[in-house]
Image (cartoon, rainbow, N blue to C red; front, side, top):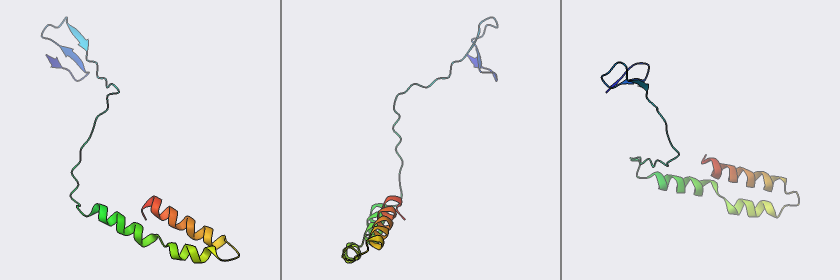
Amino acid sequence: MKVNNDLSVESGNNDDRSFAVWAMDSTAVTDFTIVDNTKYSQEIIDGARAVYNPDKLESLKTQQDLTEFYREGKSQILAQWHAD
């Protein structure tokens, strides 16, 4: 069997040319990747601990105007979410 540049397939007989069907079904494909950074999880945990400051949130919560409390809370949440 020979596959031509136009993706037609020849089985040895010139009269027997048909186009190859290239298709993909919806079967899940699991991809395994080796990660060489063995401290990856610890880096994530350390970053999360550095950003999360419940004492600062607690002190801002007692203020009359909660604008700064909301701003700081949003900042901490987004930093956690984006892993900044």
